[in-house]
Image (cartoon, rainbow, N blue to C red; front, side, top):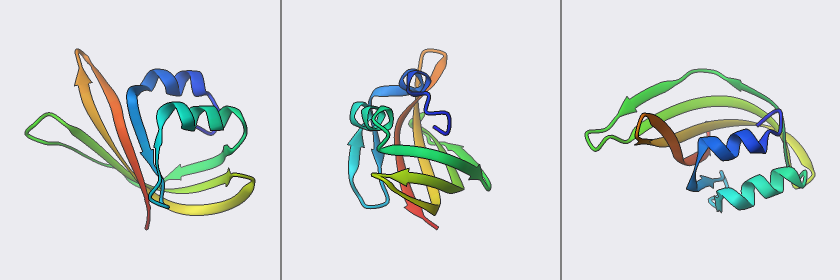
Length: 105
């Protein structure tokens, strides 16, 4: 994200991936990546403070990471304390991110 490498992100995220922003807006992958390409989402720095990982009985994996995030969103740059909770499903031998929910901490 900091490198703005939307090509790599495209390959890591499921086709129906969504990003739920701290505002509550659920953004489809294609829209989020397009807006990154347009400079509407520019990530300057992300520092992950900790990680927690678990796998449910149904096979869904969850990675939770509180992070300090310096980003410009729609032209406004700020620092956020975001908790990023990402769910992954297994596709063959690969874990694929299905959704991320960003909340504050």
